[in-house]
Amino acid sequence: MEPWIAIPNRSHSQDKYSRKQSTGIPLSSWFQPSARPEVPTWTRWSAPIVWDGTFKTSVLNSYYKQQEITIGLTVFAIGRYLDKYLMDFLVSADVFFMVGHRVIFYIMVDDVAKVPEITLGPQRTLKLFQIKQESRWQDVSMMRMKTIGDLVEECIRYEVDFVFCMDVDQVFQRDYGVEALDESVAQLHAWFYNMQKMSFTYERNPASAAYISYEEGDYYYHGAVFGGTPLQILNLTRQCYQGILRDKEQDMEAIWHDESHLNKYFLLNKPAKLLSPEYCWDYKIGSSSQIHNIKLSWMPKEYKKVRDNS
Ligand code: 5GW
Ligand code: MN
Image (cartoon, rainbow, N blue to C red; front, side):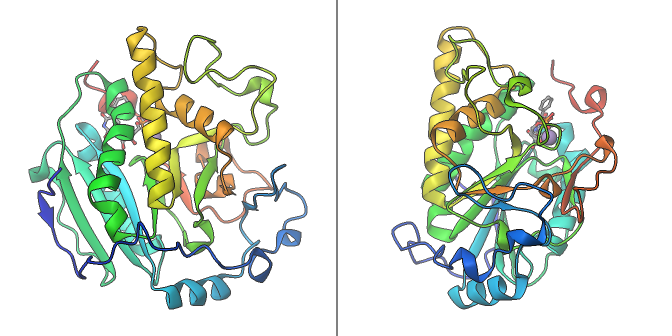
């Protein structure tokens, strides 16, 4: 896949894929779970759950600054999602996403002519890719797994140390910083973080590749945000896409599409870090004493307006 426009502000000659990744900072030096005693801050498998207030920003920033890391952010804006959401997403990401570090935005659109002109901060680079519009909206969402995998293989792995993959229908509200980085990162879904696993909306049909039984499951993860090192994201997107293809061969589609496959993947491959719902909040839920500083929030859904293709 060739970028339609690339405005790099640095050279990307070094293969960071094969280099040791910069996750070497000890948890004890920056993670303060006792700052949030009222919420769970560890998983069963000893992964930190990062809540607002549990991290020492200055320690982390100086560590990653010294490592001179680059963070990628992939986002898709196809059809009406381009007109409706891309501008606000990008403008807010420029201000709040990984401030003080190098960032490359990888933006996939179906019509490059419609991409708004925005001036980004000095440490930010934007790479635009034209991809084709899928005829079914379910496929727009699911094909992201294939496209991200291809992109990681072709260029992202040479250019960044960490990458996040996000939905475009959301807006950054406050600093979304390096405390969110790790080998593999999953987002707790705002609507399910306080629920029992029986009520998670996993795929419950045993014939699907995304199947999770009622006895299984750790958390319900949100498909709108996941991240990790390029190698981890390559593995994740390939596995999820394989699951999607297996289901298609049997004329099946998991209940929540790519999100169902992501949940299956993270059940089998435990994420190294979880982000609290403050990292992807839906204001429609209302206020909650557990939700302090919201870093990213859902945009209101107007399905009728944006889902024009059946
Ligand atoms: C359109 C109709 C239904 C479902 C998805 C789309 C759609 C998604 C689209 O037409 N264009 C598009 O760019 N997308 C990308 O897929 C956006 O990045 C979007 O944020 C992501 C997931 O789709 P969402 O946000 O509608 O899914 P939910 O799970 O947030 O409702
Ligand atoms: Mn969304």
